[in-house]
Length: 312
Image (cartoon, rainbow, N blue to C red):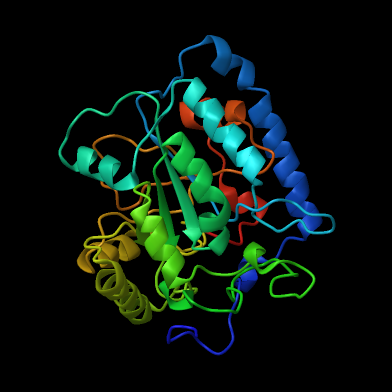
């Protein structure tokens, strides 16, 4: 049974995030990937220009690619394992997000090459396919839950994959986490939960709705998992599209979260408030080398909005 929530009867990916065709977005992704690969040789031989600035990586689905089934925003388990192993071999140090927040708040020095792994929305495949890899490698991660959909047998309404919910594909490609799976994730010792609001809506020009929805999610995390001051990631999170900004950060702080992440692809600057930190999307075409380019500050900052982000 789906946990009751206050989601509107009809909503999904905001229309202004659907304005580019899939083909146009793919061309932009290829160009971006090529630009990142061109900087890989620099990362092999030179000290990263921003090694002292931590980076946060974002994933969504972790599922194998089956014939005729290529979900959006997916990294296969084999590629995910390769990415994580490669970063560890290169000397990158995985930290829990809350540890990074606490260290920055205390003004304590941050080790070089620190990175954080996060997952958006709360797909069941995070439990089925990502957890075994994280557990084996000893890598902590934060799963940002859209808490209103836990235990649901229906797809997330904001999932942009056309085959979501279809009998043609396995449910582990789109199903939200169940509460029993959430408790197992927490018991693993490598997973912590954050919030992505209760229903992951478009809250632009809806300040009161955002506050109430976030409060519902924060209360849910406390009552079901005993979590106090959870980390938070904004739905969609693009500043220029007004999914993120000071008004959201202030509300998140007032409602008891310990941070508020955006979808802007930038490193964390030590000494700054965690309300407004950015993070990098990790994709199937990424290798450990290209992720090191992002985390090391080799790549010139580009706005994710240019490739039509429809998630976050």
